[in-house]
Length: 90
Picture 1: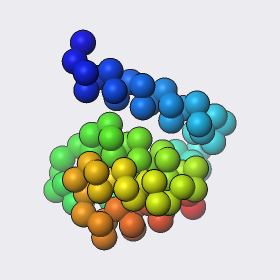
Picture 2: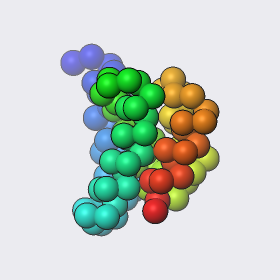
Picture 3: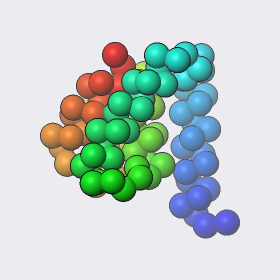
Picture 4: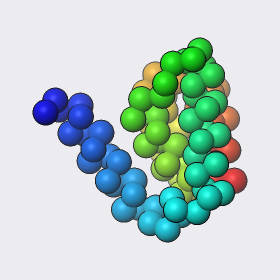
């Protein structure tokens, strides 16, 4: 198993543990999807990697700054990161 696959699995598990029931709510799913979709528009049709999905899930918890830093670390521009993270907790 590649290290990146392991890290993605651990991060996904962490996101699920942190969010608990918030991830199961239909509105929450739509908000995370909106965050991911904004990033994917910047990627011009490319699928968002797990690191982007994780950052959007963190944004759902209301940690805007951590969401933005996670997205920028994944190579997303600052402007897109800020706007994508803003829609995550709505």
